[in-house]
Amino acid sequence: MRILGNILWHIPFCGFMSALLCFLLGGLLVLTVVGAPIGLGLIQLSKFLLTPFSCAMVSKSDMDASPNKQWETFGTVVRILYFPVGVFLAVVAAFQVVGLFVTIVGIPVALVLAKSLGTFFNPVGKVCVSRAVANEVASRKAKAQLDGYSS
Image (cartoon, rainbow, N blue to C red):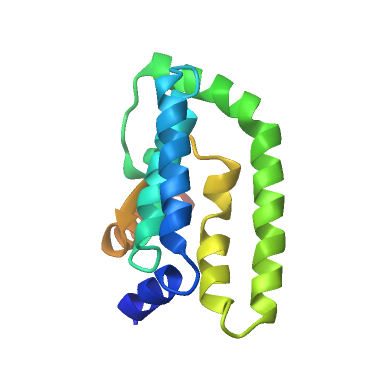
């Protein structure tokens, strides 16, 4: 079923074009150095947009990755500067989701856009992983939260 969803995403709805545009914009932002955290997040989003029904976007902090403190601080500053752009992109994508849900054929595309709303809003520190890894990250996060209640 995921393969069929990926095919529907690419063939009638040109999902590969969204992935290509995200990749090119991310590459351009990485070249500017100042926009590198956003650019790296957009490159990860482009990987997600290539196979959206087989992958998921997760935060690096959820994967217990310990980033460099200077990079983390720089990413926070860039995230604050990106906030107005992120809000605009997320609102536009939300309207697209609503419009696509009206049509039967557009529902798979609406699901892809709905899953990527958080990354449009804040691409800094996001990673594209397979479904299995995303499920494991979610289960570890839930277990840690459950352990917090018992202690």
